[in-house]
Image (cartoon, each protein chain N blue to C red):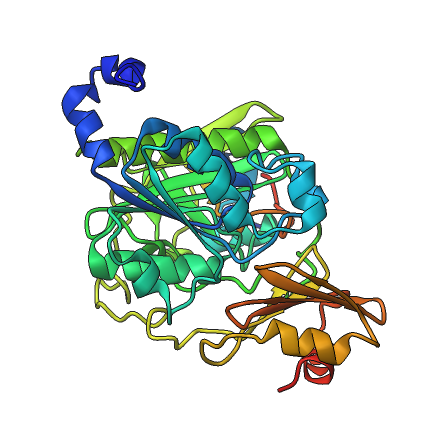
Length: 338
Length: 78
């Protein structure tokens, strides 16, 4: 299919040379939800060399309104997003090496997962992971493209390691989302997701062909039809703990939390203290009489006492039906063990 | 009684007191503790300068709220 990228090559800023660079590139996408499904499809169609997409979650019905790669069948089967996306993207473009990874990106695995990347695209939903990505990106001098949406509003910025301000120049630490009354569900519209993902992918392609994106932070509201950019050109802080002093606290695990509230979903994620593998067969056999068990090759779902415990092969679990850490920990201990 | 003056916040005329700092404006907009970046007349003001930086007539302020994403956070639009 020699014609495949012809329209993109006709775009003069890319051309034949740019397409070759795109083809040779390796991109890591962290989080394959709303933004991630949209940006991964565009990156795959654009013909990058390798796409690694990492996601910790599984497909649910409430995702379908905006998470463009997923279908009803995926939601009914409760399949992991990374596995479904990998399959769909390979069918879209077999030129691209697509690898789906069902893990939560943490300080312990980020080097293994992102080591060879030319670029990291942010599809996460929390700041703890973004500060971790920022540490990694500054240390390894890899650009990363922040993007996030809530309601009809979205923000995006291309962080260019050691060239632009880094996330920590702008904010010293993550706000503790989920611990305050601010954790209301504001909902989210599909159109803002596509706008922000489009910006992220455009800036990604620009970086991949060797150009620098503008140091402008974009904020846009598709409902009110208003947008602004503010310049981050002089926002680099020489005293910044991360890009100024090279102290990578997130990368060293100093800020890592084992329990995360998946706010708006009435759920808590529990990560094991060290990487481990859950023995699905053993656990399902033990709980067979007392709980409703669903097992597939990626995850084990246990429904018991009005709660749902989802275990992943990497040892993580998501406890649904509570947002209380103590209760989640007790449920985990009761049904899975310590 | 402090005098009032007009500044422009994200394109909108806004009345503030002449004694106000960036910190006061952020408090008034109920954005304290949020991940917000503040640009004053074309330049980002770092967080540690918010309490010293007073606002003057005609100042142009742009505030960007870095949201977490998904369904998880109530966004305070300004």
